[in-house]
Length: 165
Image (cartoon, rainbow, N blue to C red; front, top):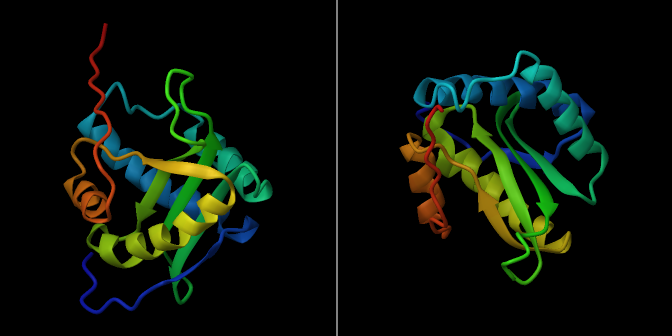
């Protein structure tokens, strides 16, 4: 679905009322990512329940991470979840890393609307939590998200390759 006229979404700290919408959005993207990396991206049988618990924990403890939701009216437009943690001990990035594994938009054409609003809101909040750098996950096939991240000032830090054994 492509929205012709997209107003900038509202972005707020996610609370318990947003958890199910975040889980639904991530589940939709997880299924899409699985098509491009079967085996590696196969969801666990209880993936929704595990993700619901993970999102709930981030929402409940605002010191260890960040959960943002973008909405247009009552409709979810996107979400961004980050967890803070140290880099591997052989690196010194100047502080903790904010790992953004869940960063999704409801409409793939909305990275510059909802995605930009979420990332813009996340940066100062993550700095305030003590993060020195952000690390964002994007699938190798997800060129709209990759282009958005690149044009937003993020650079490619590594790639992962996988195969069955």
